[in-house]
Amino acid sequence: MENFQLGGLIIPLGFLAIFYFLVIKPQQKREKKTREMRNNLKTGDEIVTIGGVYGTILKIKDDTLTIEVGADKTKLIVAKWAVGNVTNEIKTK
Image (cartoon, rainbow, N blue to C red; front, side):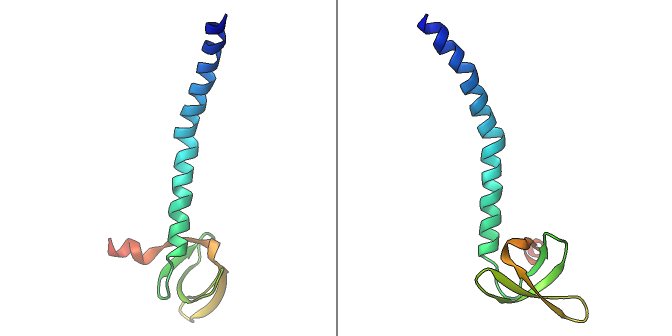
């Protein structure tokens, strides 16, 4: 009787392990990489926000950035979490 109960647990535990390694672990890696990218932002970096706005960082405060966008050099204040990508790193690779 004990073997039947143990066998009934192996399959659900196997599915949980597969789910963890195929879904949860890769998502945690992506979140960590994004968090590190946002923590390493510096003045002069060229960025793209998650809304698709391209700009250059002029000033960094705690949770906000002042960026310069467009030919007329318009200044925008955006939240640090809104940065989707740093484009100057792509150009140098």
